[in-house]
Each structure stands twice: as C-alpha cells, then as structure tokens.
Amino acid sequence: NAGVTQTPKFRILKIGQSMTLQCTQDMNHNYMYWYRQDPGMGLKLIYYSVGAGITDKGEVPNGYNVSRSTTEDFPLRLELAAPSQTSVYFCASSYPEVTGELFFGEGSRLTVL
Amino acid sequence: AQTVTQSQPEMSVQEAETVTLSCTYDTSESDYYLFWYKQPPSRQMILVIRQEAYKQQNATENRFSVNFQKAAKSFSLKISDSQLGDAAMYFCAYRTYTGANSKLTFGKGITLSVRP
Image (cartoon, rainbow over all chains, first blue to last red; front, side, top):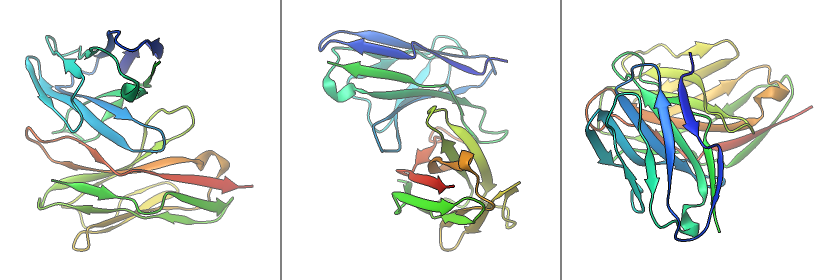
C-alpha cells in the first residue's frame, strides 16, 4: 500500500521556469490537498480538491495551478517560478467522514535560483 | 476563520522526563477534529494523536496523551517518559468535520529537543 506518492523529491529551478509536482494516492480518498512549508513555519494550504473535477484555493494560491481529472491524481503546477516559491511542498489526502486525519506524502523540496 | 496558535517555538526535555506542548485554537464550530502531528528531520508528517471535539474523554496513545479543554479552546500534548526519538517538530492542527471547508489548519509548530 503506497499511500500518497509525490515526485520529484528534490528540484532546482531557475527563475521564470515552470514545472509540475506530481501527486498520486491509492487509498481512494476523495479529498486531496497541497501545502507548502517554509523554514521554521507551519504548513500553509495552497489548493485543495474535494473530488475529481473540483478544486478550490487555499491561503496561498498565487503562482500555482492545480487540476483534478481523476480521484488518484492531483498535480500542482508552478508557472514562472520565483525565489519566493522556494519551499517544501506536501501533498495529502483524506476521507474525512471516516477518521478526519490527513495522510501526507514525503514532501518535495523545491529551490528557485 | 479558524486559527491555531502554538506560542512556544522551542522546548527541551530531559530523557525519561515528561513534557507538555501547548496549543490553543479559535473556532465558532461545535464539531471538529484536533490533531498533533510530528515532523522528524526526515520531514515526514506523522500523526501522533487525534481528538474528536464531541468526546469528553482525553485521547491517549501509549506515551502520548492530550488535555482537551473545549470551553477554553485548548489542546495540549503530554509526552511521558521522553525518548531521544521524540525529538522533532510538533504541529497542532484543527479540522472541521466535513463540508467544502474541511481542510486542516496548522499552527506554526514547536521544536522539541530531548537531552540525553
């Protein structure tokens, strides 16, 4: 049981480049999330999805886009990368009606130079 | 909007001793979940303990227990018999039960160090 899988685990980007962080879960969870964690800080919500075809903004959505075409996948797209997007990104999923907890991926460390 | 506050950025405890990590939250909801997550240097987010607001009994998981005071909106984590492996960052988190706004809100975290 793989749980939540994120790729890549590390990436260095140049300013202005674009990339997609991939996230997939095999638990048939309908809720999925993207968080970012800056050094010494808590996690801030970027985008979330309550099911395939439905996405919504979190606290810090600027500079990012998401899509949810299937239950399993929830990719996060960074357009025109900026140094302020240097962070660790976490994907998570949950089936809130059962336990409420989020299951997290291992995180993706992104550096924008 | 819901907020979660962890006012202590760092704490230290002697191995085998007990330590309590504080957390307060603000909400107008009556039904919700509260969590403590542990983040070791590997940065993996690990669920430590969960409390449902409608339950009056405080949750316990082995050496970990909570003191849930609903009226005071307080949710502290007690770690008994601290071990070196408990050294990590700990996050308090809040979540409403269900609905379109059912997302986890985190505090800023507290770094716990364990002295041998």
